[in-house]
Image 1 (tube, one colour):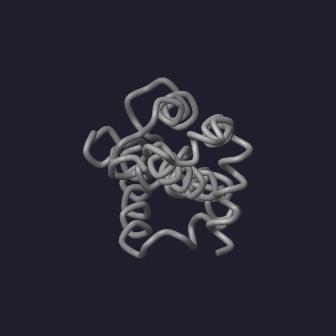
Image 2: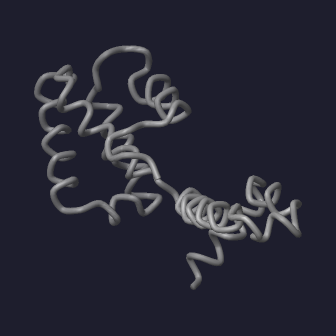
Image 3: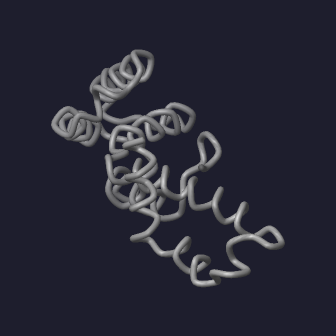
Length: 140
């Protein structure tokens, strides 16, 4: 799992191209579209009350000033946007990746599973197997 506030490279590229549209500000129309998409996909319901409040305040500020340029506010709003679009499959993948990392550490010990089943190391790096582990973790 990534540290709090850290954005992975693909996510940061997505933010720059889709949300920021190459500029250094967030517009009212972009924030409104993101909120509507979040309401449709159920992400809005998963947000905490403070996050919803901050997003609504950011929307209000963007409406009054046409855009948000404050870097600290933009970072907080973009963190909420990432959480808003954190889908079910990505949650399964995170759970599977955590389980695979645990298994990798346990099985790598001397006399562990890798000594008699070296193919298992490749499985623990396979995306499909990680998703399978994630489904098992979520359903457990």
